[in-house]
Image (cartoon, rainbow, N blue to C red):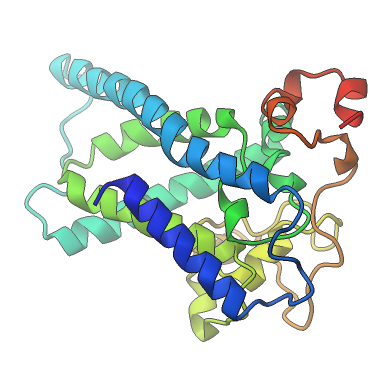
Length: 264
């Protein structure tokens, strides 16, 4: 199956799960901005992902070849000859930690935060919010991920499996789904923990719960915050009324004058 097929299958599955067992029963299934998020699902999950993945992948491969040919870096090929399960686990751990670092930067660097605001403009959380993010985020993530992963060697199948798994877990984290994962929450991210990442208040600090698939990085680096007896009072970010409501202006948002953005 192609990644697009997996994306549609995973998305459809979570839509059914949310309908059967929603965590926030008062939240409408046809919520505001859902149409926007379905557009982002197709655009970021397939069209833009294919284009940026191809371009950055080709650049990374060429860079890797040049560096090895010039003996700038030794050939690592850490995963060559290892079982597919070992390759999957190593790819998952390394790629998820790198994404945790990038996610941290998206919040701490003002220039990058302006792009990341699109994702944090979510006011009602469900699976479709997983792919609501600015097109520039894919450029940042993939640029910083491809070259380190190339040095690992290994087969493409486990890397593809990690991409599908991360997509499914990202849907799970954003889902309006009433479920707990028990002690595994100290290792894996979850809807209840990730909801606090989208908290619009400064409770627990503005930067908290950066984990994508794994929550262990947040516990390790002390950025975890999760009051388990309640949910955030409001999702979003301070002054998020600046965010336009339509897709074209959301995609151009950081370049828009503030008055134009506020009109949305």
